[in-house]
Length: 165
Image (cartoon, rainbow, N blue to C red; front, side):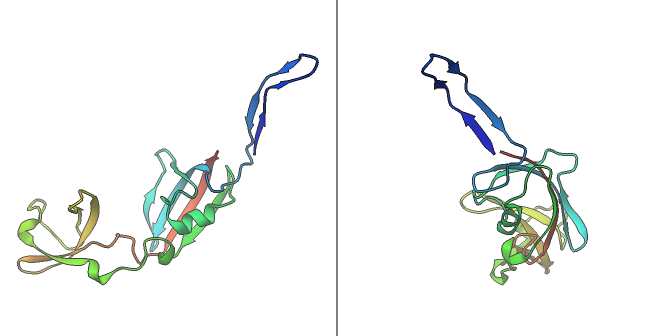
C-alpha cells in the first residue's frame, strides 16, 4: 500500500515535507510491476527456470503474460510462494493441425543436418522470428510444426514473488 503525504502549509506557516513509503504488503493487481522467480515443469521435466538469472518482470494486466499464470498471481504479495498449474487453454492453446507446413529440405540449413525434433528459428514475411520444430522428414521434404512448443501442454510453475510495486 502506498502512502503519499503531500506538502502541506499549515496556517501557522509550518511546512511539512512530502514523504512516500512503500509497504511490503502490496498485492498484485492490474498495473502492478511484478518481479518473480520461477521454475516451469512440463510432463515432469524442468523446461525453464529463473534460477541463476534475474527474476522475470512484467506488468499485471498488460497482456504480455500467459493469461492463466497472470490470473493466478493476482493478489499475491512479495515473499509469497505458490505452485501454479496452467491448462493449455489458458496458456498456448491446443496444437493447430493447419500450423504444420511441408517445406523442401533444400530450404533448411544443411548444418547441422535436419533431424526430427530439431528446433529452428523461422521468419515470416513481416520479419517476426519464432520457433518451429521439425515434425517429420520425408525423402526431400520436411514437415515443420509452427505451433508453439508448449501448445497442448499443462504448465506447472513454482513461483516466488520477489517484488510488487
